[in-house]
Amino acid sequence: MKPKSKVSNMFIYSIISIISVIVIAIVLVLVLVVFKKKKQLKPKLAPGEIPNKPESGAIDFNNGLKKCPYNVWDNTQNFKQFKRIYNSTWRGKVNNRAVFFIKPKSPLPDGEKYPVLLYFSFLNQDGTYQGWENATNCSGGVASNYGHLDDRLIILFNTLNKIVKQGVAVIMVSMYTWDSMFYRDCKNIPPGVDETHYKNDVNNICWNNGDNPDRIFFDKLFLDLKGNSNLNNFDYNNIGLLGYSVGTHMVSRCINEFDSLTIKAKAKTNIIPYPSIKYGIMIGGGSYYCYDYGNNGDYSKGKEDINPFTDGDYMNKDPWKCDDNNLDCFNNLSKGTCPINMIEETYDNNLDKIKTHPAVLLLQTKDDNGADSLASTKYYNYLKKNGFNKVYKNTFTDSSNCKGDAQIVELPGALHGLIPEQQDMLTNFILFYSKKENQKEC
Image 1 (cartoon, rainbow, N blue to C red):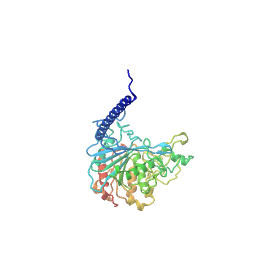
Image 2: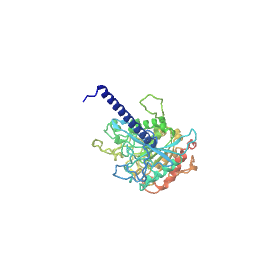
Image 3: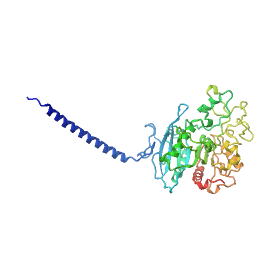
Image 4: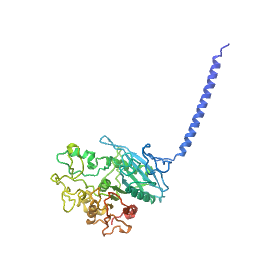
């Protein structure tokens, strides 16, 4: 046979190449069309936002190991929520903090923004719950459909659902480590212990003049809240604080510090002040001075419990009293951990400034078994005796604002945390003091 010419072979190869290119182009077009259709089905998410999950009922947050008794991402007609992670390090250790933003869906008047409740939550760095019955290792956020949980958490969920429905945004922040926020002054250092080493030890949860994991996290959160267009409906200038247990002491610390702090940003930017706190809520605790008078552990052996010194060890470095009969705060742990004659240094050193103190709601049972059961009473009495009238313990009504009469009620019980009688006063207090017209000095 006569062999085919090179020209005819080249022609065949060219035809095959052209056909191949056309087939590939068609496949790519089809893939692009399918991709676009899928993309159109997905809602546009803010950076870091978790998409609404389609499941109904309980969502599995634990790879099949456990079912959580609520659907936290079942966004309702009343609010939308999303999660963001703020990454940083402190002294070489990971300080990545999950934050949940719960945004109301109620319409805003032109130029208005949603007031904000900043809640110091019992959440791990990754945003899962610590310690709550049937919620441990489940996702944070505001649940709208929940089953059997710790009653204290149910009361809180009920309140958060109500305030968001009425236009208050919520920001839930996580902790650096278990049951820890860095609020302590750490002025009373155990004898023979290096002060710098003590204050840099995370077990001692020292504020350390702002050199701590929480301050680094606050800088990142507030810088984002101030400049991120996805968060521009959150009112940076109208923020209240809520803390439970250790969170109450951080509320106190923030009240003391925020007016004098600015955001530390790596890039040279305009000086951005921290938000000015409009109100504070303390559940089962009080001043940041609580638990700050010493350490009875053998520090050299790694025993670093934050408790009073035993009799004879206390150095009497600070002139505070924990009750009228106990000068050294070591005889009665249940009623002797918080001082009676000081709350926050900013106001202790300038009583004329106390009229500018944020409004405070204190919620605590009479025989609280997880804290100084008089923590809230001591805080209340200090503010009242120095002429501040926007302080309430276990009671609040709209008509009580700025009234000089006593606003204190003792509720029986020993539970460390919220009880049903406190739910309405908690809700009403947040809604009332979220309104700017109610935040004026008395």
